[in-house]
Length: 492
Image (cartoon, rainbow, N blue to C red; front, side, top):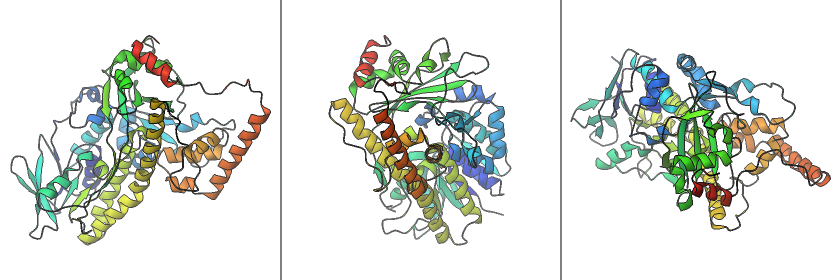
């Protein structure tokens, strides 16, 4: 009989790994410390599923094009069920800003899935529990690992009830806490330090339901999968979800006392009403609030492994998702990267290299190719945004932005070129939607040439156009205007 895989953590990445392994005939046991999700229609049950162990689950999420592609290829029935239960696919090409809108090869991939994270996790949970060979033990915590005599290989886990659970291998799906690192330390195995860089971001989120029975959106999704923007001192974004639900999220700097007011519904509403593309969604005639404002200081960008201090991998232990990599949530890549990582890890565990050492090395290479590019980009983007926001808060002159890699165009240059060049726009969207890495897009010589050409054309146009020409995009509030609105508590 095939030995059991033990998965610690029953959230998105753990459930996806279980789905992939169980469908291949591998017995799976999931150990999850929280209670099972509610029963009933998914749209309603998702709103009732409170998970203190997953605080980020209460904030807005969206599945990028990478995540949709993973579901289409690896879990099509789950995607079909999500759409039947009220999720919606968003066609990103509807937001193309250029005038010549023509379908091109690859446009079928430019979609996003609008769904709350609890909604998608609940459907995934139901799909996994229905599979033969899967056991889900809720209310069960893991307190340590079982190791062989040489402390080189994990052979199982020990639960909080003292149960010894043997395993063919153990998957750490405990999220950004990456509990296996603590368990190894408790067993006397010291793992190498991971990489960490601050996001310097606070998120304030409130969920609403559209009042219109037909679910008609009150405004266009200028970002394709969202409405709003990331500006020079804050961010405001609307993320549509399932069943007429949407979230308004405001991003603000950490350690910025004036923006503490965003914890109050009236202040968040005032900020939303001032924000381009967001204001229409905050109209009380359009939508009804479903939740209070939820606030969270976002975790740092993280990249970790289970390699020991001398570089040897701990055999039989495979962290996935946030236990390996956490990226700035403002860019919405987390769920999609977690799904891709889960399914590809399941591939190497079931059909990968024959030896345990080779499997561990393959897992390290997977993290380096799939996750490292997004960690590096997130580190750069978080630091650049943090410096800009801090300068605006202090009233000082911000330093000019620089690209993550010398020679690449800066993201501001790419965004400006995308407004007039359809090829640049598609490259940018593929990167934002996690389909193409920054290197694949920004290091392409033809792409760089188009960005430069668009900048030259824009400069020429600016010198020949009347100074009275109005900007095409509405202006966000200045920091002073925003703070006055927050202090007024909705008097904007």
